Length: 299
Image (cartoon, rainbow, N blue to C red):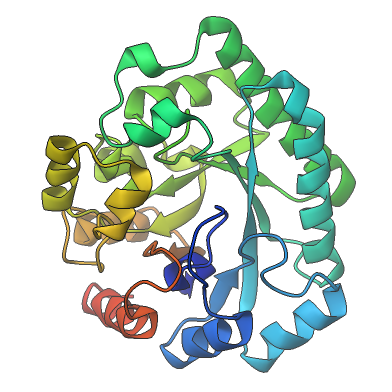
């Protein structure tokens, strides 16, 4: 049976240094449980308790499982790889010691840190991409993190493609998959980011199905995406304008996605994400609406 989780980013708890204040983890977890979700991701380091016993306690209080943790690393910079490995190991140790040994490290680029990529999210051209040598460094860094986490804790790592980073477009996702070991590094397919990056999430699910170990359900509003192109929004302005809308209100074909998952006997978690900036919108209401939508497609 497919199990449904949500994530702190749906409440504005993001990995970026932004203005505004997100809700505290106690309220986020309570609202997550109240709106019908059975699991969560960790959020940025320090959002939830970093003591494993405390972390386990707060999650158990809400009867939530912990599925993974987002770890951003500037993988195109070889000099940053070791710091990335240490952050991933620290994060994996917290989850492992709290009893969540099957949780994933959700590895990503240090999104939002490269001006050109952040300014042009959703309209990336090949000229804005990595060089051949940078690609090699990027892939080697991702494998280095995944190998260290697996050797130390037996835990798996998935890569999360993401707008505002160096792996955004379908071609860039394909390149990283080709350059990395499929036994070592999986893919976290994020439906909304893949659509915003110019791709069809249904095609991606079919193409990479056996490489996809973790799934993020996020929708994409193509009208906001088009406005972002016309007005030159950067990544954060696009998010502020609602480019990631409630499930079922955008262009992502979730009915087909659920059919593919069911046809292949998918029997794991999916994580709902509706990224909002800190203090933005009505996260609890959106979480409830998203859960009702999933019920309408059989989840």
